[in-house]
Image (cartoon, rainbow, N blue to C red; front, top):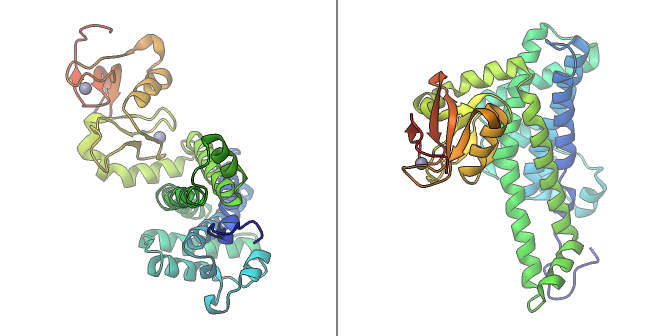
Length: 338
Ligand SMILES: [Zn+2]
Ligand SMILES: [Zn+2]
């Protein structure tokens, strides 16, 4: 690589080859196949959904492995060369092996139910590719939806944090090599670093695609059923502070976490997350109840301006209450609008 200046760490070429954008693109296609046509999806839509989903799975799992080290996607990592990696013409490991290496080397465990769903999806994919059909369309759809649910969690829970960490690392590396620069020069330097720019684009692709998917996921009936069923256990103890998500519209946004560690405000269905209680409060007002039917006011208990009037909670969906998205205070009567 030519752009390594003396004294600066050389750029890690692996980063410029993470295929996250590609994988997110397949994922988006698969969701379009499942949502843009008839309900339930036609045989043709289902066929393309399976093909795209299988491609998305393979590419995104490998992207995570490349994040660990680029040589790990070679069938035989011992004979891997950077040149071949950059050309892309090498023999890579199969999905089974990718999953094994993710667990053994990157310590990313894929739940066994998801591993089985991925395996079944790839046999469905082969049957569809070669014979154009499989058995029961409902079964195929349910399997596809299982893998889709897994990929959403994987992208948000494993892939995105990996990219984020590498992004921070690459900025730090540039930073260390450029002590004494002014802020403007530093920004200019970062904007010219292929590594920083590349990961930035990968993160951007993840965020834009996930944002777009969130609004579409609710239209996949089977996904909603399966995912909500699998969430029922973890939602049960918090139904009194679970509300409809402003994005995916499912009863899965758990609020009032009081900023406890590891307990962020996020939608268990579409994984939309918030850093503070005010944003979901205003978004809920705007997109779920409507400006005219409620308000966000200061909470008498915790002082945060996060008390939403006109909320329905999952354990009492018909009654309008005031619920503080920060502390969980339920206010029956509202004192004042300030
Ligand atoms: Zn949601
Ligand atoms: Zn409060």
